[in-house]
Image 1 (cartoon, rainbow, N blue to C red):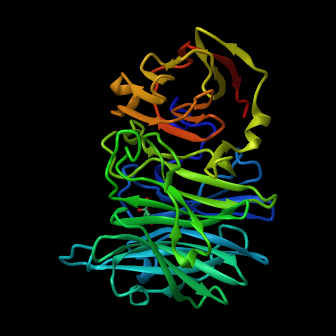
Image 2: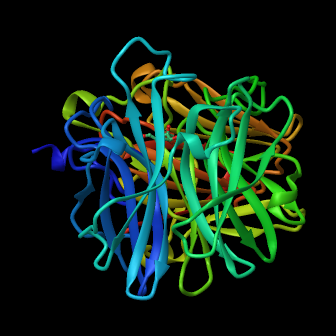
Length: 446
Ligand code: FRU
């Protein structure tokens, strides 16, 4: 019954009921995009045991019905089917995930009381799963690791299979463990990558290449918050990797997204060679809220984003090109007006000071003098308690905004920086005022 609620997203994948977190098992299987995600179908607040939900699409916007396909049903995953990834083999997808086990008793669940098992299953149709097989257990991880080791991501390189796992050492240092395998089932420890003073835990690692350059994506916990970066409770970003990943030479870390709602992303390659990134448009342990929770569902994924290398070697993100096919003819945007529920704004800054206010309580502003781009909520209900996020150093010549029923994704300067946030307007259409810029609004027809 809440399927028609005005806050129901139209372009973004969200759960029918309950809670969603990390994207998992992303792959292109025979030209169809396979999407799995962490799900607690019965508890919108995220309690209960995590499962994997599944959907598929051939165009990123029309999806099959949500189906829960992996449940915690063996001793090695009894407290949750946690995050993981997929590889496509002839005639099947092989999935890997972390089986989380919390032993009953008085434990801190960091140094004791928790098992983190790497488990695999195969599926020929994306949703019917084979028997589960345990590949790695706590005893297979380096002795200085805590019980927090998880989120396997697998890829093939140099004629072998490679896996990265996110980990926390017993001395509270975040790192990535690298394993090798000849047959995808037997794995041996090969290397570790870390960075001094860079958090106590690294979740959801991902190694991928764009234009030949290797990148290590991680979601670190425990970074010190700063004025213009690392503003959320936990972070997500990537390191360029110099040479082989196993040598552990990581360059400077760049955040994927500067908004309120982004965490635990994963990438995959499409059949036509595009690197696609999906993030969870949410974050654990935030001090702001989503008013859909009492209505029975919470969170969504970001739009799929195409990743390219920019001139400075930093990665550019752009909504998948399939979105363009859904856009109506442009209508001019100037001064003030109203926006439909799902639309794309393509704006150009024409003055040193630029400001776009939506629904009377959310302002996106840029000042050339300081180079600061800021997203500020003046209205507590509109932002569910979100306040302000900002970044520095962009030119903000162009700004593309994807507006959905209850979210915004803002792509600055061709995707050099992105800001994602949820927002909860009281009514639609959403009014806007625009100063210091001009552009067009394109309605999305889905
Ligand atoms: C990241 C994360 C992963 C874990 C999953 C559990 O949001 O904590 O590390 O596998 O969520 O749902």
